[in-house]
Image (cartoon, rainbow, N blue to C red):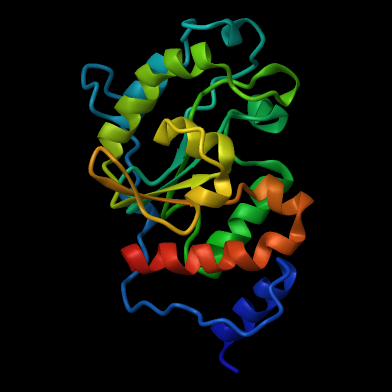
Length: 225
């Protein structure tokens, strides 16, 4: 078995996928880390770093009183795909980076399974500050954070967006539909195709859904590979 196939076989076993599935192949060269923008030109609002600096002092909602750090986003600003979760958690609030801790580690393994890593995608949340006690974001918090969220996506202009979990899906798609009804169908955000799947934290609690998550990822990867 080739090394790549062996790695993916081990990965699938780790996340709980035990039935044979097809693995997407791509002849495209991987995105290199040198493509990541590093400038912090505050006179140019059309760079992610400039927007991140502006967002770091945000006090548009009450979460500014309880947060440790604004969790803006991480990854390649030229990424084809953007992954969006609901909100930072405790670990993210401390580190200032989205999807760290156990859920972030699972997300990394999920990305590896379709030939990606954090330097090739962009990862963010619907809001930039951690809600107390890991509660869902409130309507006024989401509305306040739209200032940053919409500008961020306007700069990124990805080929596809993947929404992770019910709250992210309902927030971005502005619906109260269930996650089950939103999965398996393509949606639209300002002309950008949107795919919905489970949040990694949910998969840690409900490992039986990992097989369905893997199928979601295969469909997603076919959109940009």
